[in-house]
Length: 173
Image (cartoon, rainbow, N blue to C red):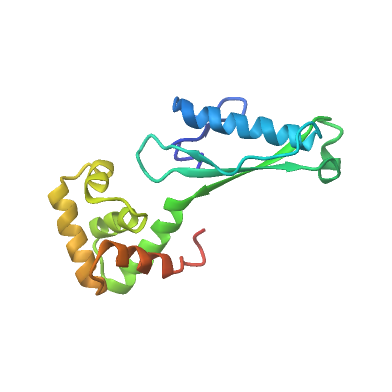
């Protein structure tokens, strides 16, 4: 995720940074602050997962911040006496890419059809998919029609269900 720099990156001090999408940055900062307060015993409630928008327009990341109780980070006591949190980042597009690769293999999809499959499988509309992939809506419609024909489903919703049922290869997350 950090290597791609699409929504999250690290600065020269190896700290995770967000791009200038202020709503994502503020939400994640707030979730981390709140989890640190819970870990430090000064707050009792956590917010849910935080959506991190991606400049590329791909599906957002989801971040879950979990407070770690003091007993879970005894090994770090010599370097840091403060509260700690665990930050988990989920990239839904990564799973969809693995599933599209499986479908590409099973149904002989082209590379272009597989790219469209990822976004259609994530629930994106034709105009959204066209914008993200920098294609015309007609090209996306053509690829979508071929996807549906090759996979034997009749709608984008049915294709999304098919995508959700396909496991990723073991070497992919």
